Length: 391
Image 1: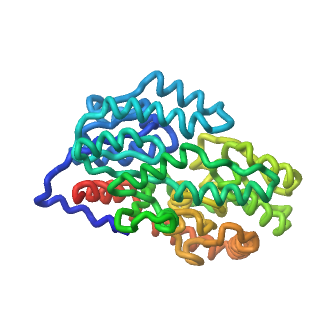
Image 2 (image 1 turned 180 degrees about the horizontal axis):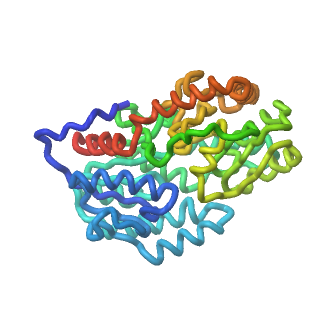
Image 3 (image 1 turned 45 degrees about the horizontal axis):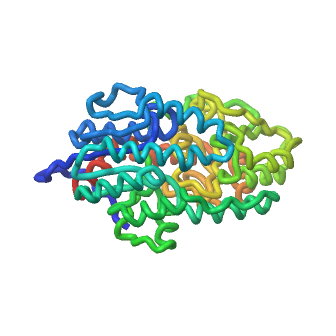
């Protein structure tokens, strides 16, 4: 594993970076995170071209942006209604990649993300570019094995290996540098035979100005928050079982996020669970975080989990699984609890501890905020820029 060193640009040649990623730049989710990354490259003069699906921001000079435009927006919209995720996970990215490989300009460095750049990587390497590849999850075969294990527990058929997985494996093998977000992701890559020497861990940043604690302690009842897609991959099955074992009738468990198809057997099993509230997607996630007493992310697989650091920035004690990448920033029993992903008793004990001792919970939450104050987007950008400069 290579560590990202502090930024030192003295005496270094400034390279140009062509960055290609199939997102709506400045949009929600990954589009917001990518924007934060590109701002750092733009501010230091490293960004030569940003190739994106579409753009809704003016924080980067328009002449640096190449966008697929209307077709990109149409593809993104159609993918929302694709229950197989085939379009979103493979065809859409393949179309984007072929287009990107034709419009990208020569640059010393080419950077992209897994699943959307196989053709572009090959073109860039033929031109002599140094190639960087971002990975936001564990190794795809590890992800598949973990998810299929969960699906079998709930009577669902295994997901089959797809061309998307094989494509990602080819991209990982081709790239000069792989940028992961956690030790968990790095470990799964090494276990699959990739050399640790070409892997860099670069945890995501968090906006500590926006995500911050409120002065008033949230009102009763005791409120536990999960924020993310409601699916087996996010481990909601273990959280719901833990909640059932706790047997609380005077507390609330809020599941905030889109309900995905594979969660239906789980939700049906726990239909009458006291205190359970399925909130769906809500735009004001900050208020939800600030009104909770504890945050839980019990993921079976999660390359990072940005919402965990957002919860920590809000002063919430967090309970996370060992398969959540952001667990790297949590000090067990000091700023939160780290639990094996399938340990139902571990989740229940952690929540019971937080409820029984509000003073300790408050102290843990403040310790969590302190931990992420040096994990801002500015810090992230400094490390990212230094990584490109030293390539």
